[in-house]
Structure formats: structure tokens, C-alpha cells
Image 1 (tube, one colour):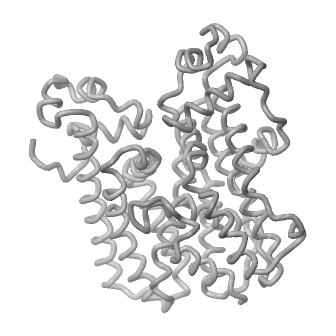
Image 2: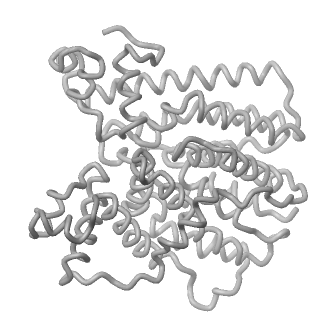
Length: 408
């Protein structure tokens, strides 16, 4: 089969992206692909050998296409001069263009990142995927007279911002939220006065987040069938991702009847939500502030002590963090869970907000926009430093946030 450079509905790779975009990577089987492309499964097997073989060729094709997209953007950028005063508008335009026109690409990257540590060939390909984008932001930073070594984490942060647009069809409020985030990003980086955000910020998030806040949840009791279902579902998600979750898989592992799973939880989505609460609450236990620093601390403490502590917990690339992203992304593909997926995304930014708000030697003090940008940077920076998943210990990431938090 010849190399396909465009993702159209009548190509195998284009059909595969449509399946991933609407139903998730777990729905991409050779049988589903053959049905969508109207060719026999044996033809696909003969060409690619297996599902993994097809996915590897798909990712290679995506890497090449992404390189072309970012090279074209970089060439266009070199033909024009972007000044600091245009940075917000320009960055907003790039994010909206990429996450609307190339939505399927961005969705696929997120999907592949979440399974990357379980598939041997993916980490290196994912690292290659990100390099042309970083080169583009290096050129951009050079034009607005900022340090080019901020480019990797700027790339990760803009990716994280854009991913909030993937969780549902972007509405006016989400687009305003995106613009607020980009404005804050460059106000801090360019040492400009901070403007107040003009939107309440992802309105579905804070409203629903208050209903699902897991922080005060009591420990689950394995002797309770309902709690055992949640514990078992959490184990499956941590090991296999959301694709491994089913009523039967839970029943078999928990050694309970299949009917018990539907007796205690009306739908599988209800189990997903309960598992999110549990995984999130467990993750927070190891990421709180050391005693004695609840009221405030310095940047030196934040970078030398707190970030080191979070790095050891591998807070953003741990199985728990990957599982939480997986639940959000898969939930966004279910009609009844899209608003909840946005709420979960918002909820994940509250802990970062609480941490940064306690910094005492930052002027102006950090608020929730800064907290969300920190989280977006974490979410979008996986594989920027190479195949190994480590973000908080990445020196580029730390240098970016030292620059970001430097007093204006």
C-alpha cells in the first residue's frame, strides 16, 4: 500500500483517525477498520501484519504529517515579523487552528501518549512527533525576543491549553477561557501587568467539580461489594487503561456476580466516575504540602523541596495520573459524560492552583489561571524530553517556570 499523505475518509489512515476521534483508540480494531473502509480484514492483516503493525505505520505517517504542518507554519512565520505586542493574538490563532483544523491529529497524539508506556515502539515515535513543533516555537520566541530555551515547555503548555478544546465541541465560553489562558501566559512571560480574566473559566468545570470533589471521601472498604467494585475498576484502569474496563472484567477480578455490578451502579460510566474519585483522592494523599507550610512558602522552597517531592511521586506521569487523563478523554467521547469530562479536567487544575497561590514572593500573586497553566504544561509536556516519561524533573520545565514566576 503506498504512503498516504492526506487523511481522507476513503483512506485507511483517515478512517482510523475518525474511529479514534469519535470512539477512542480502544475501538480501533482491524475488523472495525475493515468495516469502515469496506475492505476485507485479511487485506489489512496482509499489509500490516497485526493491529500493532497498523498502529505503528499510522503513527509514523502522523509524525511525518505533523512535521510538514509545523514546517509550513515555521516557513510562514519566517516570512513575517511577529512583535511582542502580537504574541497573544498569534498564539491564540495557532492553538485554535491546530485544535480545530487538525483536531483528529491532536486527539490521536493524546490517545497514543496515554498508552505509550505500554507499547514498545511508541515512546520514541512520540518524541519525534513533538520536535518540529518545538522548532516552530523556538522561531516564534526568537522573533518576540524571548529565550528560545523556553520553547519545549511553551509547546507543552499550548498543547495542554488546546486539549481543553478536545473534550467537547468548543463553545464561546471555552474559546474565551483559552484566550484568557494565553493572555496570562504571555503577561507573565513578558513581565506585563496582569489583566483580570474576562470569563469565569470553563463554567461546566467548577459547577460540576463541586459535586464530584473526592478529597474528603473516606477510604473504601473491601468488604463492601460496592466499594470492592470501585477498587477493582480502579486496579483495571491503572493496569490496562479504560479500554480494559467492562462489567465482566470487574466481576471476574472481584469474584462477584455479574449482576452485582449493575445492581450497585446503574451504568459503566457511573463506575468510571467512582473510580476517578478514588484514584484522584489516592493521588492527592502523596502530593500535599509538608506540614508547617500550609500558609505560604517561597519560590526557593517550591522548586527545591516541593517540586522534588512531586517529582519523586512522578505526579503527572504515574499510572494514576495517566488513568485520570484516560477517564477524561474517554468520557469526552460519550454524550452523557462530555460535561463531566470537562469538569474533571477543571478539577485537576485545582491542586496546582492551591500550590501556586501559596507562593509568597511572586508579584502579582498567582491565581487559578496560573494554576491551570501549570497543570496544562504538565499534561502537554510528556515525551518532550525523550522517550522516558518524566516532566517535573525536566530541567527545561523547571527553567520555564522559574522564568514565568520571576517578579515582574
